[in-house]
Each structure stands twice: as C-alpha cells, then as structure tokens.
Image (cartoon, rainbow, N blue to C red):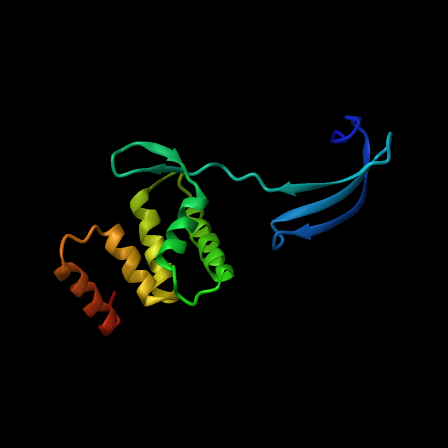
Length: 152
C-alpha cells in the first residue's frame, strides 16, 4: 500500500475493524517512512452482473439505478432512506443469488416490484405503472383491484 503523502510502499496496520455492515474491513495505517496516517478499506470483489435490456443491448449492473427507481417510486412517502437502501441491497443480493452472469432487465423489475409490494402499496403502483407500461386507466384499475384482494 503506497503512502498518499510520500508514496513509500511500506506501512503498518495500527487498527483494523469491520465496516459497512461487515462487508468491508477498515484499516488504519501508518507510513514507515514519514509517519503519515491513512485509512484503507478492503472489500470483496464481486464478479460483474451483466444486464440484458429489452432492446437486447447489454450493460453492467448498476445498483444506483435500482436505488433511483426505488427513490422515485417512494417519493413523498413516509419511508426512511435507510429502508430504501436496505431494499436496494436485498434486490442486488437476490439477483446475485440467481448465480447467472447475465440477467434480464425484466428480472430486475420483478425483484423491485416484489420488494415494493411489501414496503408500500402506493410506491408499488407508481413503479408498476412505469415498469408495466400501462396504456390506459383499465390496466391501472386491474392492478389496484388485485392489491385490494391481496393478489398483486
């Protein structure tokens, strides 16, 4: 590990602890040459997930897009940001647990909808109306009736 101040390659670990809910290790280091202290993080490197979009193009999975979708669906709802973050983590974990190198955008949308239905019905309907591309009010009413009956 190079010192950020003098670029010396030798440093020693002063303190080490878990960070980011046990998904990383935070290490406090001190440079052997200039005694500058700095922090490093050690994380598990996950293999990239490739998303196959509706038009057939492929792109690397981006958790921030899932989070953005959740935030838009939950806008002006009394849902804490931490809860939305947890749901984004849960969705990513579910997608990785499929053990596929490539996943469809449809798989992502279904995972998001499964989380939203248990989180907030209004957010679920908002997301579903965009995701399912409702063409008219009848499609919206169908999903509202299913929600009312508990079958969505």
